[in-house]
Structure formats: structure tokens, C-alpha cells
Amino acid sequence: MADELIAVRGLRVSFASDGGIARVLDGVDLTIGRGEIMGLVGESGCGKTTLARAILGILPRNSARIEAGEIRFAGRALLALDEARLAAEVRGSEIAYIPQDPFTAFNPVFTIGTQIDDLMRFKSPLLRGGLHRGQERRQRDRARVLDLLRQVQLPEPERVLRKYPHEVSGGQRQRLMIAMALLTEPKLVIADEPTTALDVTVQAQILQLLKGLARDRGVAVLFTTHDLGTAYEICDRITVMYAGQEVEEAPVSRFFVHPSHPYTRKLLDSLPSSGHGLRGIAGEIPRLVDPPPGCRFHPRCERATEACRATRPPPETLAPAHGVRCHHPLRSMA
Image (tube, rainbow, N blue to C red; front, side):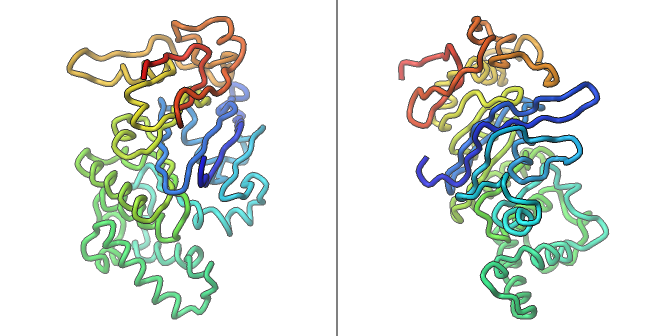
């Protein structure tokens, strides 16, 4: 990919559980270009959040293990960095995170302004620029905070900073989360289902806001969601995950018109439509403690053959920027 910002190659992550070792990510590949919004979609439990946490380096130490693979970000091998360097140089500064739940993201006993001040004390981009003088840096940081709060459409930002988290709405809290992620001037923002807890009107506003800010600032975004409609609205490309494996990747313009993996096709067919009733996908999601070999979707796939059960399909390019991992992809005439 031209101007590639982050590349995940062959990432394998396992978790120790009471039932045994769960193979949560199984050789996942993913690339995101600078200024691109990549949608990561799939059913709950497919590994979206685990992948995001692996990039950030915040997997639980007592249970998670990275067994193989690499994560390269802006030319740096993130998995080779020790915790101190990752925390000081990358996490929260070059890579920012927007959590799923805006209601629990803030500490309820401190004002919003106090919590933003704490962020800027350690992660201000002015520190990276060499400006360490306290009073001057604080004044410039405060001006940036107020300007960005206005950009995320928060009225009277000075008053907002004096409030406690419970005094603002869920939509305003999510706007604050977006602003805090952008305050550090990151190269990549990981948005982990950031509109799940919001009503549809506020959700649409947040999506347009995030898309506009990414476009205007050139920030890359990894947008994890289980909602294909949301992915259609905001993303440039979409990667589909199933049970810890990525199965298809395509530009939005092709993804919804020419889905090629049987799971992608069934996922799209399950969307509510006026032309048919509710449709599910036959079978069950596999247990990751004892996952099926080969393509993990093969027990639910009518096209499965012995090859599907024996080996995981290699990536195949069907069109520019459209790849699929399937021994028997659904091919279109386009």
C-alpha cells in the first residue's frame, strides 16, 4: 500500500482461560494507509477489540500472549518496544484510543477540565516539539483545547471544562472523547465501537464529525464495529473478521456490491430488508479453545471442501485493493 502507516502481519494472540488456551487471533493481516478510515467488522467475539488492544499494547498481562506476528507502525516494530518506551513515545500520543462506552470513560469525581489537563501534562504535542516551559505550554495547550472543543461542536467549551462528567450528555461525552484523542495530534486513532451507547441521531452526528476530522487532519482511523450500516457511512475500506481470522478486505465501493467470501455474503444477507424477513447464519460460532482447522468458517459454509477443512486459504487478490481468504470465493462479473 502506498503511504502505509500501520501493518499487522501474521498476528497470533492466545488467552489462558479456565477451559484451556483460547486462540483469539489466528494469523491476522491488516494494513491502514495515512488518512484512511479502515472499518473492522464482524460478530461479537470475532477478535476486533483484541486486535485493537494488541496494537495499543494493552492486552492483559496475566492471561494474553502474543505467539507470533509483527505490528509495524510508521516504520517502527511495536512488539519490539518495551513497555516504558511504548507508553512514553507511542500510546496516547502517536496512537490514540476512543473507547466504546463514553459513560465510564471519565472519572466521576474530577471535572472534565482537570482530566483534560492531566492528559496534556504528559501527552501534549508541545512536549514532543521541545516546549517544556510550564506557563507558556499550559497557555498554548488551553487555547488548543478550547479550539478543538469548538471543532467537535461543543457549545460554551469554557463551561464544559468546569463540569463533572455526569453533567453532560452521552453525545457530549463522546465528543469529548474524540477531542481528547485528537488533542495529542496522533497519526492513528483507534475507535472501538464509539457509537454503540448512543441514540441514532447522536450516532449520525458523531460519525460525520469523526469522518470530517479525519479527512481535514489526515489522521488514520481504525474503526471497529459490528454494524455494517455504520461502516458504510464512515469507512474507506472494510476488513471482515470471523472467529479470529480476517476473511475479506475491500473498498466500500466494492464491498457492498461484490462480496466474495461466503461469510461476508451471509453477513450482508442478514441485514434487515423490506424484501425479506430476518435471516440468520446457520450453525454456531466456533469455540476458540478448540477452533476448527483450516478456514474457521467451514463448518457453517455450504461451499466447504476438504481443502477448507485442512488449510487456511492464502490471500487472493480479486480486484485492486480487494482481497479474500477463501478456497472457493464468490466471483462477480465486474
